[in-house]
Image (cartoon, rainbow, N blue to C red):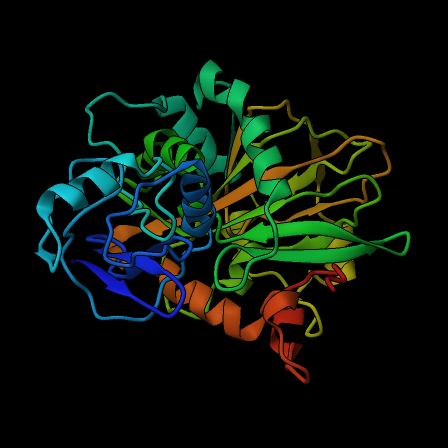
Length: 374
């Protein structure tokens, strides 16, 4: 629906776009400065286009009922026009610069192509050990772009209601430690995850896999590590029965010096190991007996692991970044839970920018596994 209307100081073009998959409505607004003749048509100059790009990146997703998709930015829209000409609306929409559809990413299903990404031997290795290292899953083009995409996310400003940034204190300096809920705001990265990673995990499940949650752990120089733990203990809220599978996508090389992952093969078959109540980490006596192996990786590697696999990592004692994505999936047959998960996380552990004084973080802190997020 498109409507042009006057206000005290500007006119705005409001385009209501309902996401068919996300079942959310997004309101885009482009403003212009007041003109002497308010009834005159207004061109989109360079400043206007620049402002529209900024507004697109700050668009919000209000809680409105599900609707079918009426239009999308970047394609020729089929729209209902009120109190304005169809020609003017088409001209304006045609000149809006194409940007990632913030808040509208549909999380499309993994490819149904008959060609498999994993060999029977790789599937069997995952069943045996609980994990699988893939060196060439995402391909050379995505490998070349991955560090650039991560740099972009690292530069994002703190923004309420969108991506979720968490910080830690490194040598007394507030330092970015983690970003969550970023896939809807980076179309290229999301596309790679859906085309390649989701398909590989679907093959492990034997059915279509969907994103449950995503996080990017930065572990910049001096960044803290994680105590021994199993991810499964943090995923029990939504009653899913199958183990989740996480894809660790390496934006940087991970080494012993910068705190690479350490894993214990085969212990995913043991269920939840005894845990400390205060932070859900594995009890010290049990952790000390596990056969830990260092998992050193190269940039562009993808490491798939079962949510019951015990793992840990040490502090980054090097001068190199160790930025790793952790994209967690579940079988689609057990529900598309991602939206509910982030509603819950935003309530239980909101980013600092959204946190109200006196917010109770006790539940969230039980899943920190030794990390002291601010």
